[in-house]
Amino acid sequence: MYSFGAFMTVCQVSRNDAEQRVHQMAKHGWKSSGAPAGPKKKADDEATASGEGLEDLAQAARDQIAKLIIARFQGHGMARLVDAVLRARGYTTYLSPEGPDKGIDILASPEPMGFGEPRVCVQVKSGDSTLDRPTLDQLIGVMQNVQASHGLLVSWGGFKSSVDKEEATQFFRVRL
Image (cartoon, rainbow, N blue to C red; front, side, top):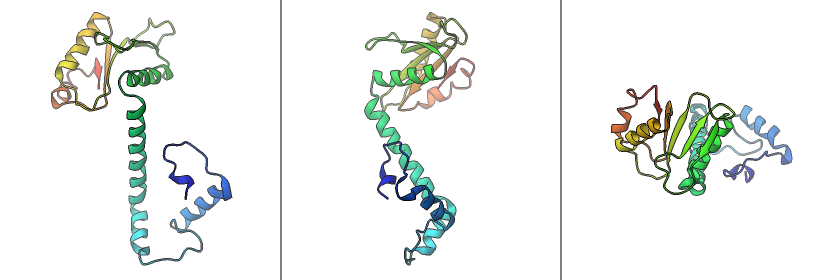
């Protein structure tokens, strides 16, 4: 019970034959052996059958991950995180230093020297506010200035409907 409460940790629960015990509990409707069945038995069985408990656990995990990302990657830290994801996907990147960046947080290309296609210009916003159309227009302008064929607009706070309406128009050039 205490080992499963560690949402912020990646671990393997192994003491006291934990894996075997979890498999046994799964086979028996998530009831531990020897535990008395109480009056909530029918409701618990229905929740397990519908997957309701698993959805709550998944949402709790997503919430914990989101809190961790917000706490550790505010401001330029979010750009460093996106840069690391792009490098892990095989891109060669240029990460702008902290401070004014003229709309360029990251430039990326899949070739080892960074000369290949697609050339991607990335703008990253880590704040809670939703991004509006002028931010998208700024990215498109910067893409032209740096000869980027594609743009990536990353926003932790999401996008206003004016930006969402442009998604189809910019489909072959920009991803949100």
